Amino acid sequence: MTQERTLILVKPDAMQRALAGEVISRYERRGLKIVGMKLMRIDRETAERHYGEHREKSFFPGLVTYITSSPVIAAVLEGPNAIDAVRATNGATNPIEATPGSLRADFGLEKGRNLVHASDSAESAVREVALFFDEKELVAWPRDADAWIFE
Ligand code: IDP
Ligand code: MG
Image 1: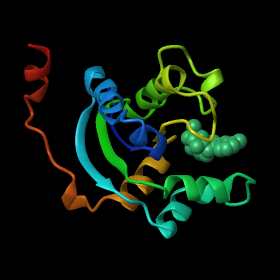
Image 2 (image 1 turned 90 degrees about the vertical axis):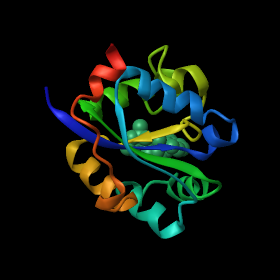
Image 3 (image 1 turned 45 degrees about the vertical axis):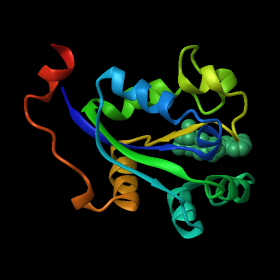
Image 4 (image 1 turned 180 degrees about the horizontal axis):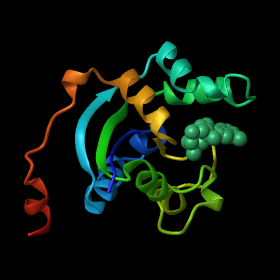
């Protein structure tokens, strides 16, 4: 069982539709632990670095405008295979192609308004967690914390 950490963002469309609690609750009830969380307005420079791999894409300017358009929740989630688990909970980038029951299928219709972000690999997770959090903002849970959730 590989313990991993992954970065998620509750994007502006989910925040504006008051879906933050619903989104976070999906991760919690899968058993993922929140080890960092903040409400923030992403500045343009951070947005451009976060989405740097898409810099040449036609949707990049709109993506940066969107992600900086209102407050978001950034969080670090931890658990067994957390990176793939969260990507599956989110669903495919295009909500129309997302697995029914995933967040993007349940709440979205458009690629450009797909509610959530999650790191896509171990390398991205390390880079993205460091972009949004200082190490001292990440908290350690007690070793027996699972017993509280599952008793
Ligand atoms: P991901 O969020 O599922 O990892 P990526 O391909 O990394 O998807 O794209 C990053 C984000 O860019 C998407 O979540 C979505 O918000 C936006 N995006 C991707 N493709 C398009 C597009 O064709 N039109 C508009 N926005 C897009
Ligand atoms: Mg991506």
